[in-house]
Length: 312
Image (cartoon, rainbow, N blue to C red; front, side):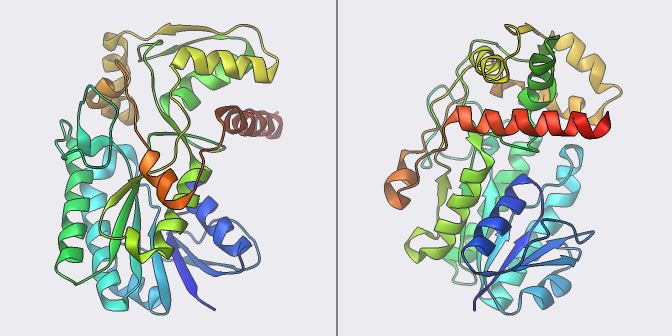
């Protein structure tokens, strides 16, 4: 039976591990603390994935290596480069195909729906980090040293996901309280369901014709923050949402004390205007239809309420 190594047990890594195990595959889930879903078929391993030798020991019998890691937002510049290098080295040594969970930061600010053939022109530090990771992995692929692909999504929806919407809007809407978010409330925005990221990662890993390029995760039609809040309120049986725009000055002030808020300053372009991806290529290639947004929101509402009940 084939072994699949998943690095990272956040929403995407856990969903990928569950999907593979549900198909009867052997899954080795690597995290620093050995966490993740406790399910038959999933072997949880405590390991530092930036250690290429340790990573290779755990992936020596793997057919696929899924990079679902997520360093803290404010430590991308220091933690992503060694992690990316270790994954490429491991893929080269073991022969496992490396499929990386990416994002849209590398494209920079664009004024049209994003497609996979756009050039990488990052306009942020974090965008340059992600663009460099893919450029280096792709160069190794084109040199014949590894086999790789990247799967890119927009801001996530789904249980346990973290985004300005999930942190600043959804909990307030459910509670019937007023919230603020640093965004244009009416700009169209793409929201990717974390489970669809997992489905795309697994499909790409299994199809050798899909390697050597990037793919956009099949994603539902864009919705503005306001529209997403309205849908959340309706599904939760909550009052009409009351949300306002957080001024840039307030975000800067928050950044003095909160490193995540500070890091959001350079990516404000993603929320102050349209931010839409075109995922038609992956749907055509793999037959994956995006999960309806209402389904993703119901999952988030249930998760938020369960979390609140546990804390009560």
